[in-house]
Image (tube, rainbow, N blue to C red; front, side):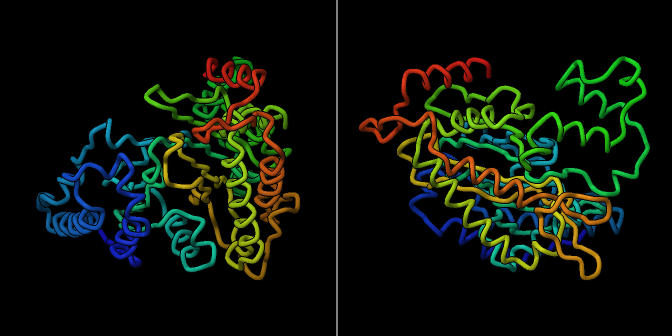
Length: 382
């Protein structure tokens, strides 16, 4: 096993000290008994080294790795929040760091992006450990800065499949079952029994959502308020029409114009950085996401944020090929439609929020009666 940190421990210290009062205000860091993030990273590195020595010598793994592997956190004070993706790929290390089981392409993407002006738009990757073919990435937990995190995961791009998937003819029943779980009428009994190819499945995901037409789709929405259980927007992956997406985004922002304006401003900054980035122009970004976060607590200190995440299918281009990220995809041109999605999402966020209303003394928006009814019906469906 090999463990490498590119400024890892220093980055964790900065992570805690950038706004020390802000970090102290979050629920996750009020537990004084928990180890600090830099100590956890150091233990993880020592544990990986000890495990590698044990595997090489045929000995039992060391106590540091056992501590990391067996580490568990109180669900109430260290709740792990995820609205989309494969939940079995993540484990919390400490109050501000999560471990993601990943791959070499994603590790390379984090290393490459962090050295460019796009660095502020991705979570800090503090450390990386390789165990066989698996990369363990120690990544900043973006939700830790919020008291009551409200989260929306947006898949970006008109193409969400690799070009290699287009050539595969292998039929998979597991993908057919995924389709039927979303839409029971998607396949006939014969088609479900035979399975579908990866290309057929991914294209179905694109045409049944807004990916094919707008270049982005909502993978999941979670909204937290007060002491009540979090609300999830119903069936976000099947939203396709602009009006449906507008209603979902409005529900997510709770009719708070300041939140929506903050997302639009952050996305405009990201678009400018992407258009000026040589790294972005020479890499295809397939099935990558934007993570939108804000604090459901009106007294929370952390501002709304937007970050690029999920780079497992990021790949450098061969030769002198340069992408526009807006041109239509044709086999061999590697275009992914990433900026097409960014343009469309920015257009939606820049429009006035139909759920916005007068603000009450607490600073929260007070939507109209009709808007409150629409939002309530969405919450009930969730």
